Length: 162
Image (tube, rainbow, N blue to C red; front, top):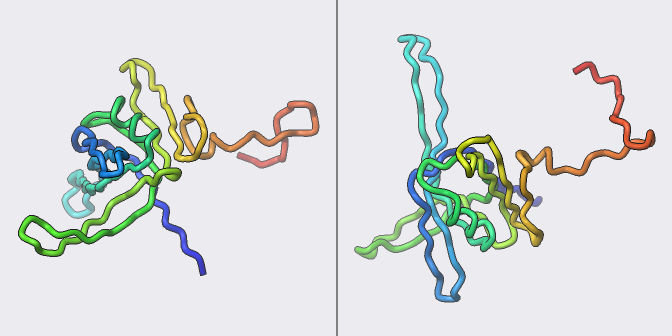
């Protein structure tokens, strides 16, 4: 049976993106992303918050270029990638493992949730497929083609009560 490995995160960059170059000449962009949840403690009534930190690695040239140009510490992003764990040796030679969210060369998605100009709440999406970046789209649901109706462009009327 085939499996699905897809991670969707919305959070803030923990530090400025780091750009590295592989031996092949390809660029890799990496950063940490903080996702937080908050709740009210039932016993004390105090507001509590829990933050998770995620290591993000981007091998996609187009998405990496956007992150390099437009993102900095604190930037809010929506991203889709795959979770991967890899083994490496630290400086002392000990084996270590790290889990990362990876946006592969022709996979993954990133949407900037901050305004570039600082005024309007504009959003820009950049997909990992071989296509031009899609500007102004705010969510995967809005990127689906609109359903065509037989009434010459009229809206769907399917009697759904909400």
